[in-house]
Length: 279
Image (cartoon, rainbow, N blue to C red; front, side, top):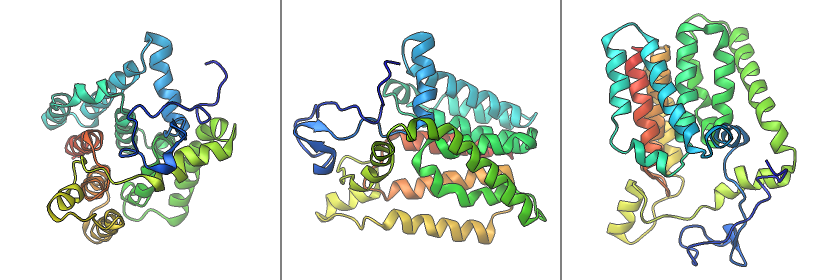
């Protein structure tokens, strides 16, 4: 709002050590990251600040809208039950308090499922926004094959993907090209320099605590590849399968990652509830 590029900002390392960040993320006591989130996440969070003085109102609204969309997926008790399970997830308020952006990711993921069922012509729009909301959503792009009914032509699939990528580019470009090198470092390259966090909620952290050695850092990607193979072999195309595949991929990827915390598991629970509601 002050005309400053969010990817050029710096803040002090409040912990005073490198345990949480590593040398690539801190220089002369200052963080080298201004904002690690893609532009769409920043813009959507900004709406909460503009309207109510706190970005967390945007996250709260995202949670409520995600639950409403789950209910609207199908006129059945199961959809209502799925929304209740999601809304009464015990750590939901902790996710809001910490200002994690996963509520926004969940809302747009549920919106993709909703559009695929109720508003097919708008699926490309929801899908494009979903791809633009968080970096790791790009790894989940192959699961969009589940959104297409059997017999969908390659041309129709390519058209939907092209439209979705176009939407993602449009919402990302203004902030990204303001200072592309700063954007590329914050949103992309810096993520490869993340350090192992012993306090992660993952099997990698458990293995490290027991063995004293770090887990193989590429293990999450191996787990993701196994999910790809399983889904392509056994999953039946449907919006519900799409949501379930996203949840399965994320839970295995996160469970074996160097960094895994409450926000990711909140998203996974929400995706599973969406899959239930869409059945």
